[in-house]
Length: 364
Image (cartoon, rainbow, N blue to C red; front, side, top):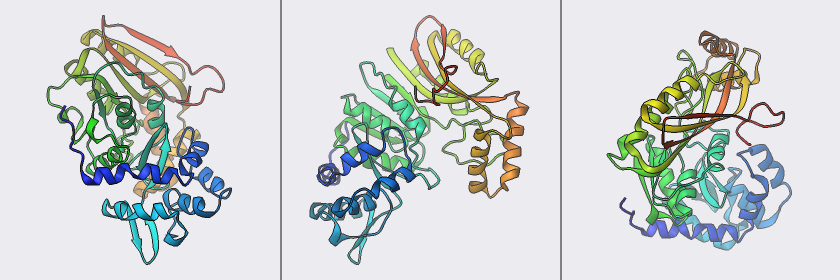
């Protein structure tokens, strides 16, 4: 992999974390966001601080238009660089980020979309679930469906050369910006492409993917970034199919996903067993939760709420369509899972962590 050149813009971006940290912002973020993106918590915690830190939080986290006179002076010094990158609007003595927030989590800095915006530049619970499971083997990393780049940054931070592949050009550009922000330009190549189309015949010691993974019936209009097809496996199948050609001899793939289930066993089991034997790969499937998928279930009503907001479908109609799609495939539940895949003898190991009360979704 050819290292990306370090530009003047990258140097400007890499100076930003130190400036923002000096205001207390990194410590503030470390206290309020241990596991996810929760804007209500941000608002409540912002009420506990004042002065320059409160203005910094307003600017970088709450989407506020703040007077530059109220900011820590070094923060004013980085505003021109943010404006040149299209991240901030600075006019009439005020500054505001351009539809983004700045997070500090797991030791890396990321510009992402705030959670109330349809997540084109997505970072959510599944992103953190994969981040918390990264057990990297020696060698290079391929981050598929990279989004704004949290997996890419964590791998590069640990010293691995990384290729980040993202089909959305806006998300790919933001990933590239976040790489520069963390001073990791020399370790990362960001490519705008559809999965393995971005890597030709290259092989990697680690292949990571947080793909579109939600089981969404065909007749339901859902944002592209989350739509995993009727059974949640549309992109996952393509990722698995490419592993024999792109995973090194001693490499490992890690994929986070969702599948249909009957509340006890995931529907993906037989398909994974067949894949393992055909590809002579050893697969470990760990299921962390089964969520009811009937019309009155929280999962279905939550998906329907997104559908109603995205497509303008009446909420009750969206609930009916989602529940009907699951029922047609014989599913009463959806399940959350993590996959680990290595070259081997063709075995499938199934680990069920969903039965113990209190285990919450992916966070185990």
